[in-house]
Amino acid sequence: MTLDRNWLKRFRCNLRRWYEAHARDLPWRRSSDAYHVWLSEIMLQQTTVTAVVPYFERFIARFPTVDDLAAASEEDVLLFWEGLGYYSRARNIHKTAQTLVARYNSRLPEEVDKLEQLPGIGRYTAGAIASIAFEARAPIVEANTLRLYSRLLGYRGDPRSREGQTLLWDFAGRILPRKRSGQFNQALMELGSRVCTPSEPDCPHCPVRSCCTALAENAQHSIPLPKSRPKVTYTTEASIAVRKNGAYLLRRCGSDERWSGMWDFPRFRLDELAPPTTQKHAANNGHRLKAMAKKTRCRLEESVLAATGVETSVNALVTEIEHSVTRYRIRLLCYGAVHTAGSLQPNRELSWVSPDEFRNLPLSVTGRKFADLLVGSSSELFE
Image 1 (spheres, one colour):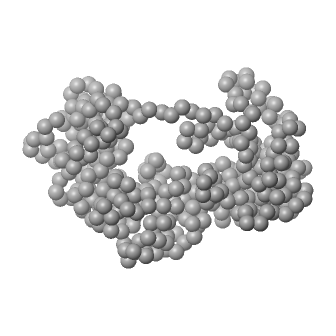
Image 2: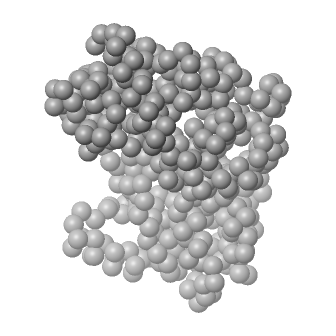
Image 3: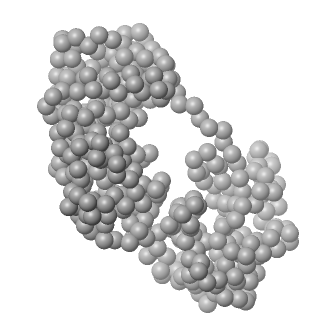
């Protein structure tokens, strides 16, 4: 596409007018504070705006400044991030806050190249921070603008390929005005999020429809090419709530584990239990699991002993939770157990935690669901 002066003028003018009339009142847009811009951009990765708003407000209330965030423990940061998922984001903002305090006088740098050197900040996030907080003329390409640019250009190739990325980043730089680039970038993202949507774009109400090649070619539903989906892997796991004198055994997940830094009940793979493929199989499989074969019970007790140093008697199947983590579809069997002998192994992040203390620890998503079921439960459930 040739971006002549008239096309650019019409595109920029129509987009700005639309944004000024339709921009959402979001808490991080109420100021150009770089700290707020940075946190919101990290939170919005892989998460919807609606979901982020309450987390952002709660997080800012707890960590109002970079210094407050840097001084906090990782556990506290994870606790206030709990529920947003992709917890490496929380660990990275904690590391970045500490770097900002140590090297940048508690301020985010204004330059894109310096921002990209900070943990968890890539090309897009650096451009968003630089343009929105500091009015730098920095282009952006993320999920919403990738879709918008592809349709504007009528690009039928893979926008995630090297060729596609080169084309889209070049386009993003060419359409960016010299002034008020931060507002312009926010307008692009807002348009992509609310109008130029993936499956049902609202083309009749799009302020830049006269500039869109895909609409002119009636190709808006086939552009961009969809992202290839990884093959789903099904697996079965077990989570064990070991009870002792009213408290439960929790462990902190290691750096090489899923939910690193979060707390969870001892959890193990049960590969021999295949997932159901039909409703009939699901019912039969559920009945078989609830009966819990002696072999499975013994295996779980041995696994708990090896991982924690305590002997247990695994008894009741408390609940089943189905959840997804990246390409994995996990069927989690949650069992109750009682402590029978032994002490916790030293040098392991293990702790007996009362139900009243659950709320003070960052738990995995399934760990929190299991913990909520255990609060106020009868000890008979574990005998």
